[in-house]
View 1 (cartoon, rainbow, N blue to C red):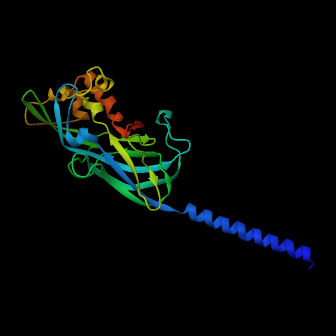
View 2 (tube, rainbow, N blue to C red):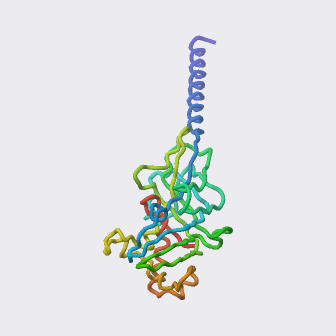
Length: 269
């Protein structure tokens, strides 16, 4: 074999080794994984209580939500809930099981679950289903609020259970800091946030503010209470609230789920 052919064969072998080596490095990078923590938060409204738009002081003794099929995504371009479409992204990280958490007590925000072996990267979208609990105090309800309401020396206990199911799709968390970054040695975090002020309003905001114009307040529920602890769910409230108030309640409930201050697409199921 002449020198030229030997040199050419040697070059081919060298290039094959180089390509194989580069491929190995890429495979290692692609296999880097970390941990992703899913949390839920009712914010200070649920943790500390607040004054509704119509002057009722609300203290949440319990605020249960039941979550299922919680999933994180890496999307490019970023997911926009206003598109009206489901999320389409790669390397989804899923939290198996059905999880009921109480946003009014304990660690805040509440850990829903932790997933290991998650491919590294920025998870900038999240979806979840809010479904009826199958056991415990909130059995049969996707949302279960136990509220103490006080105004002008009058106090009522009110338990509100929501039996409908909701599917939420949200983009990147909007807040004081960005979330969703998973690194090999640094756990990531994604938050499902629930804005109860959308339902009851916020007494610290002007009466004509956007949040208070859209809110129901607590007055319609107080009007149902006759002392002791009053209980209601969507089926019973359909016949007990005025048509306007019930319609407003039905419109507000799908808007409770957020990613921080980021809005979500919601489908009632």
